[in-house]
Length: 202
Image (cartoon, rainbow, N blue to C red; front, side, top):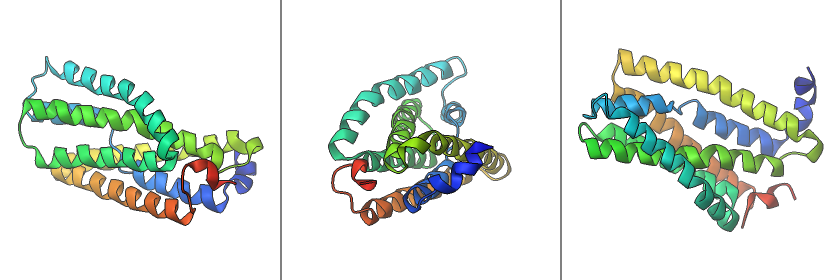
């Protein structure tokens, strides 16, 4: 397949290390459905859970424009660090919160902000790490990685939730998200960026 034929050309040092960081983040990124299950555990009744989902989606939508403006101002890579931080924040809140309907909505809102910024920022960085004629292959590898990591992440998260506890599951995701924050921060400095991801490839 051409995707694998071109992979060697696409996987330069910068893009490869970026994918490693994305993989670390993705392998601990649980699906939104677990946020809804957590909301129910915090006291939100079944009839109200769809409202929690609605709040999550509203946050996802409203995060887009501010995230884009912030990325243009401070750099896409740094905005992505912020997105990983939002995921870590919602995860910490899920670990520490044992009851509270209002807190359940707050966790969903923060998680929605993460969803609204993370994938957009990740996709926005890729063009500046790869050659123009190979961007299609780069995106294919990116989504292949995300898909594989998502399967593993949700399997592990669900297994930890069922076999150990929800706290263990969220703790696992917190560790991976913090590792991704540290990893991307290190990459940002190693790339010598001052403004945005545009300077990475130039």
